[in-house]
Length: 285
Ligand code: PDD
Image (cartoon, rainbow, N blue to C red; front, side, top):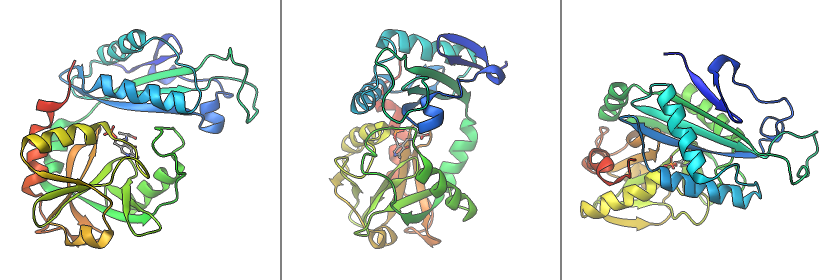
């Protein structure tokens, strides 16, 4: 089945799916996005993702491109047309096409909407989760508004490339006080020796991950203690477990941080249990 993308009202073959050279997403990274997991052909936590999209748009004064019902229909149609059973759907909204000028274009400029979908190899993901992944740490160098899911991802791109070159899957940003903020495309967690799950509060320095929000519910149901507080790299090194969360990875155990094994160096019971139970708590529609 050949890939199809949605671009500004049209479903196009992937190779022909393009936006104008003066799209503000292209010229200024002036836009926002969401990534939703697709499971069995259905969207995971769509409501929460679209709520966060609304918030990101509001924070940047970008008009909603269409009603939620219409957007939802487009997401489903792209998933359907691409025959995606398990994978992800990507949605991007930019401030639209206008003559290059940093300030906002005329208020009647239509936002640009792009939606793509692709499959993921679930077996490969499960195999990775059984092994766990490595992360490196890098200095935090992003703007303070990382609570907005903007397509301005240059620091994330550079950090992820550094991780890749170091043989790791993710890079954890570390703020000026030595505390881990989050990964380049995931939230960061540790589990202390007394089995307390620790992750940074979402009020500063991180994106409020949807997977993170659902993971709290799973953890509470499993009876784990949760502390929302910042943790240092030293604390992560001394932790029993570490893991990352995102729509693309769900809960993924971390077994090495900057080359040092975490705990016993294999995926721990808490991360494994959270991963196993996750989809009992996410909304699938
Ligand atoms: N990334 N933090 C950052 C910086 C992210 O980019 C993401 C998601 C998350 C996790 O959010 P959620 O649980 O809602 O997926 C945290 C997406 C998947 C991406 O950029 O591909």
